[in-house]
Image 1 (cartoon, rainbow over the protein chains, first blue to last red):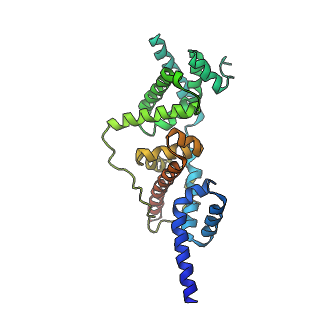
Image 2 (cartoon, rainbow over the protein chains, first blue to last red):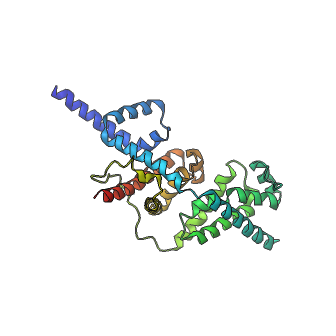
Image 3 (cartoon, helix red, strand yellow):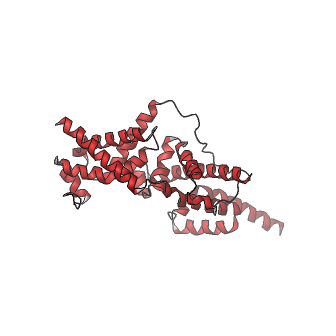
Length: 92
Length: 192
C-alpha cells in the first residue's frame, strides 16, 4: 500500500514537471492529442496546475481589452496616411 | 467610397510595387492603427509611436519592390515596425524595473480567475496589465502583444518575430507567466 502511494506521488510529480511548460500550448489548443489528454488528466488531479490554468485563461480573456478602440484607431490611421503621403511627395 | 478600398491586399501590394501611391496609402490606412498599437508598447509615448509607425511605412514603401509575398504583407510590416521601435528604445537607458521571468508562483496568491476586476472596467487593473507588459524584456514583450493582445495566430506572430513556432511558444509561455505573476501580486495586495 505504502509502495503504491509512493509510486503515485512520483508519477504525479513527474506529470507536474512535464505539464508546467506546456500549459500555454494546452490553453491555445496547440498540443498534440495524446499530450492534450495527458494534461487534461493531470489538471483533474493537480490543484496547483488547475489554478494556474484558470488564472492564465482569465488573463487571456482580459488582454484583448487592451486593444486600441476603433475610433482612436481610425484617427491614427488617417493621421498616418497624411504624414506618409506628405513624406513620399517630398521625395518625388 | 475610396477607389482602392475594395481591392484585395495582394492587388494593393502589386500596385504599390508598380509605384501606385494610392494603393500604398490604402495599405497604410488598413494597417496603421494595429501597427501603432504594437509599437506604442515599445517606445516612450504616443508621439514617438506615431513617428515609428510613419517611419515603418516609409521603409516599407522604399523596399516594397523586394517584398516577395512569401509572408503576408502585415507580418512583414510588423517586423519592420518592431525593429524600428526596438532600435529607438535601445537608445534610451534601460528601464529600472524589468520583470522577473522566474517561474515561481507568488506564495499565498489568491485564485483571481473569477475576479470582477478582470472585465477591465477598472482602469487600475488595465494599468497593471500595461505595466506588466512594458516591464517584460523586449524579446518577450512582443510575444504577448502580438498573440494575446492583437490576436495574431502563433504562426503569424512567430513569422513576425522570425522565430520557429516552438521557440515562439516557449517565449510566449514565459511572458504570460510573468504577466500573470503581476496579477498575482496585485490581487494579493487587494486581499491584504
